View 1 (cartoon, each protein chain N blue to C red):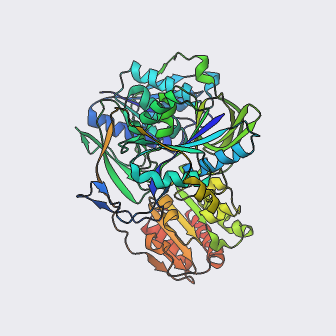
View 2 (view 1 turned 45 degrees about the vertical axis):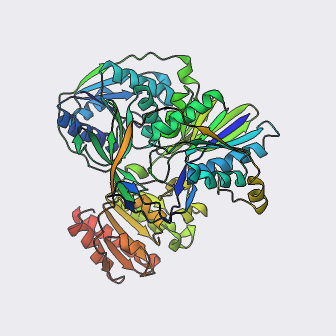
View 3 (view 1 turned 90 degrees about the vertical axis):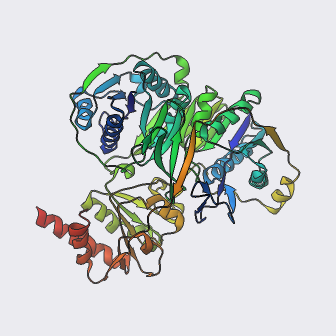
Amino acid sequence: MSLLVYTENWDGKFKKLSFELITYARKVADQLGTEVSVVSIGNVADDELLKLGSYGADKILKVEDDRLNVLINRAYSSIITQVADNINADIVLFAHNFSGKAIAPRVAVKLKAGAVTGVTNVPSSLDPFTVKKMVFTNKAYADVIVKSSKKVLTLFQNSLGVEENPKPAAIEVFTPKLDDDDFKTKVTETKKITGKVLLTDAEVVVSGGRGMKNPDNWKPLEELAEVLGAATACSRPVSDEGWRPHEEHVGQTGKIIAPNLYFALGISGAIQHLGGVSSSKHIVAVNTDKDAPIFESADYGIVGDVHKVLPELVSKIKELKASQG
Amino acid sequence: MKILVCISNVPDTTTKIRFTDNDTKFDAAGVQWIINPWDELALTRALELKEGSGGAIEKISVINVGSKDTEPTLRKALAIGADDAIRIDAEPQDAYFVASQLAEYLKANPFDIMLCGIDSSDYNGSLVGGMLSELLDLPSVSSVSKINMDGENIILNREIDGGSETLETTVPFVAIVQKGIALEPRIPSMRGIMMARKKPLEVKPAVETEALTEFAGFELPPPKAKCKMVDAENVNELVELLHNEAKVI
């Protein structure tokens, strides 16, 4: 038994998502009594790679190639499969995000591995190999048995958190075989939104719905996000109206998130919205309608006008932060 | 040029989820079935591309792996505007099984562009599109939020964490699409519904293939504790609860 993790980097840096993935891999490897090997693709400095050792990585295989600084599904899948074959990995782990969803299915086919995506816990049994995953967009969970000897899993974010478990990680260079067919897809332009907290990596998310009434009312919401170091999000009607960009839409057909704290401001809580946010650890709802369904899913609620509550909330949280120094 | 849209038949997104047979099966009693929301957007975009192609795109087909019960969903896709439909006659077992069925069909009946939704709202696999591209040994682009054609060239946009990218790819390819690919799903017109009855819906036998995973059981999330209400005049109490009780700020 051996275990391989693929973690991406963001301009040469890892995020909490990466460390959570290594934490998870360490726990599974300990169950199996094996090592955690990690494959990193693209340019990452060695001191950054060594950070993965703090969370339990034993071995880091780095693949550097200037053509690989953007995600090319076919090339990445080929590399990860070559590494998996090289170390004879039985389990290959990905994050359940943009890159994991793009590559994991291809790697699963190459390895003829059963794949389970959006896994929320360590295996409950090794024989048969059984893991829990979200189904029906957060409305239920399923135990899935993987029947094949090789397995591919993607980990749902913020399922287990991050734990340090330092290992003297060794870095090795891995040189894959790639051909022109692997690069038939070309990235011609990249646009990055800078200075914003990533919605899928955020500890705190501040989200506005139709109750915000008007796109000009978003300033205090953005201020709350700034005070808390939070990402901003919105409900579907808000992105459909064009009040906010659609990458902020959280819900069944938008992004599915699981932050530690989620603020639903002027969001009534339609079942499709709850599907995208109900894995949040704590939900705060502010809504004028005391019968809004969001209060059934919230931990803390205020019945009131979001335009009055929000500035007050910002000022009280600022006071709290100031008193903490 | 021909475009294929892969269709998953899923419970309506407002369905109350229940299980039967000692929590080992989804309870389909009384459930309304729909085209998986991302697949519906993919179909809408495919039709827009065809209409704007000046005849370069000659056909939009839809395909589904499922029993006869899924035919109303395929008929709906025909009513929206697909030219023909294929149903591979098998109960879907897992993503690998479904992707293998699609791949076998496509090896004999190739298409230029294959569109799949990024997720299905039932079992949330996010796997079939990627698996299909690998089984066919074709390029794939995932998280696609725009597809445009500039003559022969295909220009795609994909959403990445914290930004977006523009890509070019060779044909044939598989695009795995998400929100943004079309603004609103197209709704069938009365004429579309009438015409759909006469459009071809071909049923193909399944090929022998295995499933690599299986569902052992399902459970619903534990009930949520009652929401603690705070008076709107006392916002500070909320801040204190978040700080001292939940310890999240």
